[in-house]
Image (cartoon, rainbow, N blue to C red; front, top):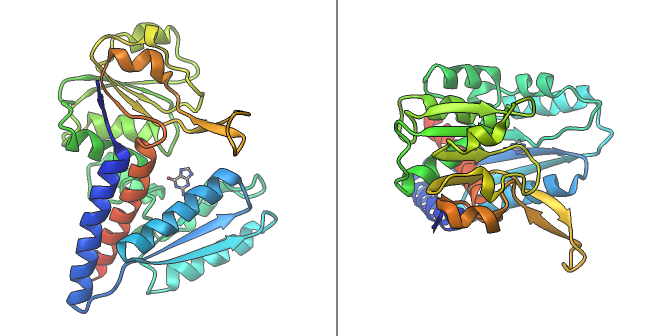
Length: 291
Ligand code: GUN
């Protein structure tokens, strides 16, 4: 069993990005600048956004964090987005999800200029992705492809089962891995909450991407020997033995699944750090496009 070490791989990637930033600066070119909008005080979202800002500092990017209160109106949020769209120093920006219930997420994501949409969530980027055209790939799927590539995990002709059909992970993952590309050319099955006989399907999988958001859902009896496991889940589970009162659990029951796996991502330290690295990569690409 080989651990797909997202922490190490993302550190390598960040070093490569930092090197590119140094070169841009040495050539007198613009420093990449990422902005993030956070609405409200959801604990997990605050942690993710602060990790994104810290990662910017590490690679030499400029960053701007816009924190808005929970009760912010949709109109006010759309105004903030318009300001970032019109600010030529900002190369890319993200609106951290989930948004409070009174705000229409789709409307917000559609307001982001697709050229600055480093999350790859705008319909223009999703459409381009589906058509194999150059675009910003959503950071989590992009990070998974990068991890599979860097560990030389064979995907061509393999049966990939993606569990979960979210717009952020499952759906794009299923599209990308079926395409003619590195870490692609797979036969993909997408499973979800209405799928019948899931275990019969996962037992046939060469690669499983678990992205359904249910802690420790995928157990050892559901996978075949030699499987590759990508665990996208990261749920806070109450744990009184921990100082902070919770532990982070993936969608995979690591103890029973890992002995049967060829490759497996740990939680934490697998997919999560890759997501941040690929957001930086997209921001670098956005900046280089301008240069
Ligand atoms: N919430 C969970 N994952 C993500 C992500 O990749 N981008 C944004 N903006 N919000 C998220």
